Length: 189
Ligand code: AP5
Image (cartoon, rainbow, N blue to C red; front, side, top):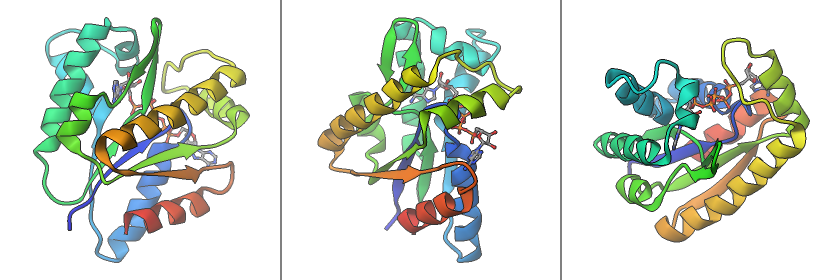
């Protein structure tokens, strides 16, 4: 049966890196997933109507605009058949507070089987963000990153209550990418 899996993790935790490695392993075994980046789908809509020029601007958009973009992305993803893997955020840190990344109307469209939370030490995430010059990352300390990781666990529990999905935590510490990718591949098999 086709699986719908959602991958989350605070910005810079390395979720996209781990997913790509896991998918390479699975491809060798003939297990295929269609990978969708939720932020990219939102960004394409926002860019086409001139709302933003840069994907890092999306976090600062008015809440109602972000909600409209989320809904459109959720509907587009719901149309995909077969195994689907959605790279997104359990919550987004906005200037007005945490915004649920998967509000009820998005969850009911996608109805995931599993939500994976990729985590690592707060200090490691801080260092990864500082060394990424390709993005305009939020400037925040490791304590604030830790609060965000904790908040994501709490909100994931609420998502499980709505959908009946399971929640899996995958650790992605420095120098152990291979281990994290193997663990994720096991969940996706
Ligand atoms: P998106 O681009 O998906 O999010 P992001 O937060 O910018 O996350 P990244 O994908 O850049 O980071 P990552 O954690 O995947 O890390 P990476 O693999 O690059 O979304 C963009 C925007 O869309 C969001 O900001 C938001 O506004 C919006 N959005 C998305 N979903 C939404 C939703 N549901 N609702 C509302 N808005 C939404 O790795 C980072 C670095 O770490 C790399 O340099 C990598 O080499 C390194 N690294 C990774 N693993 C290891 C390791 N084990 N050891 C050492 N280094 C490592």
